[in-house]
Length: 108
Length: 124
Image (cartoon, rainbow over the protein chains, first blue to last red):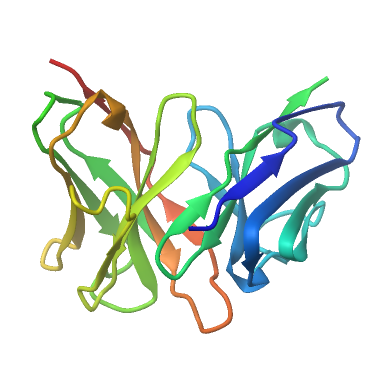
């Protein structure tokens, strides 16, 4: 089973700053099967990125994804107030789907 | 636009079976295109995939839960359901139903649609 490890656990930043979130897989995965989600308190997760780098419908272009193999990154170029949330990466495995433990982006 | 809504008891006794239904609107569960999924989130924790059912009736379950999980579909009502047997306090969580886009041989389009989630507490 592939394990996804996200870092850092918490990222404290100010609006307007750049956020860089990491997701590391315990073994190499196809980038086509890597997605990112945003979750705000009391809400269901929202799909941001699929295929490691493709933005989902309606997602602003300040969100971008990159990476391959075992290392993937979600970048938020300039944080808006509504971007402070928890972010999860997810892998579609052949036997199981797994999520990272999440990175919380909080206001500094 | 696909919309999903979970329903079911919010309180289940230990050792009993947790049963939830997801009602789908804006799309048919009997047509291809989505994996009709269940995902849970323990209080204050991350997300855990439980399993899914495809329109063909095929099911896939998280190996860690497989012995206790059944996902089935009622196409006449456009609903799919989750049954989790022999529950303990460790099964207390918010349960989401979701629609994940069908994967090709090279990529998956992500879990596009989510229900609002329903909290199920396991307690006597």
